[in-house]
Length: 444
Image (cartoon, rainbow, N blue to C red):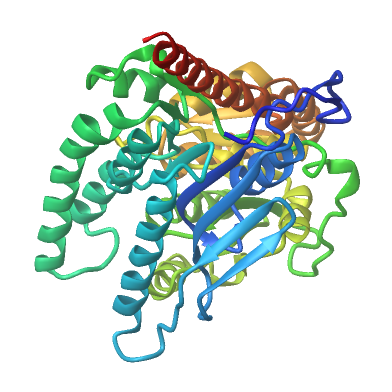
């Protein structure tokens, strides 16, 4: 291990001075996320806060666009990228093979002890490979479970949420069931520690035999330095001028949830509200026609704005312009354990919210007093939105409570403290184990 520094420094402008306990520690971080990364927990929690506290990271992510194999170095971070040329013959298959080969080479490096920490996020079966590498080298291996991936894949296949043939659905169902067994019986026991997204996820995984003390809940959050309403200018767009505006922020605009917001909009328009809905996020090709057909059916095509994926400041500009922000969330087994990011993003921007019944959303909205929780239906959501539309002063007062609540409960500066504690505990135990082994050899 490269060693834990003890030089005192300030980790964040709003924190008390502390030691950079992660200085000189290099982590291998394997995840299925896009490169360049855009998800807030990767960018803010790791590349901002934890790197700022001295952590060095070698990333293995998936390139968003075609390009050559390369290693991009950015200060304390290195990004290992496999060659991607999906436009060529068998391009997707060739990319998968290149990615797998790259990850096996990184696993070999981890087994040789090139890293102080190994972390795998949301890739349950790769956790077996890297867990074994950690056992060989004595390196702590953390599994970061931000989403129950295998349960989600099973749901997608059973309900055909992502269009696929019957043979493909059967293969995915078999993979999800087999993978779920291997994940809980092999991958998690091999892991030194497990980061889960919520207390409910911790309980569910605990029911499968994983010790509760081996798991730490870290919910989704935001960095209030960047999600700062005072620094964001609201969008000035003629399409929303003089109208009541709702916003729905998501990584991918999927019909299974978005149709609920369409139904809410239809109810509001039928009740006489001159309202528009702004959808902030990428629209997958397989969803575009379905969404447009649904809008045509409801007669709402001129009342819905698709922005596509936007830079953070622009996306937050739309959120700040909205009179009400929406957070529909399903309560199926894959989603029950989530802590929706969009909700705390809305709160950080000082906007009133309407969310559907969900464990984390219930707690956040009730504790913060920033909006209403409704049943999972378009009519119920519309009723919640109408209450806020009808009393703008009350709506703004509710939204104004959000930033302080987020700073106290879901700011990544504070969540980073918890993650840093997990890492330093693991490294301390590793170092103590090595010292004990060396002492035993010396006295034998």
